[in-house]
Image (cartoon, rainbow, N blue to C red; front, side):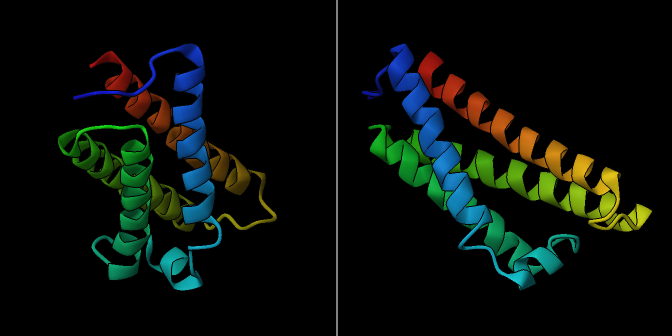
Length: 130
């Protein structure tokens, strides 16, 4: 049973919750080891990082009153997308040897963050449309 508020305000609050979750998982909860291992497919710390994002997404959708199947589905989808976006960005940056003094490093980081935010719009749209 879906009880999420489908009003404009409810929709914005859902996306805002996902954005706050993103800050917490990409900021305070992210370790240097997680960052270092995101470019290694299957590395435990990269999986853990994306897993935290999935758990955080689950918490947001629980707070929005979603059924456990939607919570699990949205958490899993966020985990899979987040993992592959991070893996791709890290490997592109490594392949071209871009560092923080290169403009293209920041373009890659900005693209990575934009894709994450667009993912949150997709997740919210899926739930609000259901």
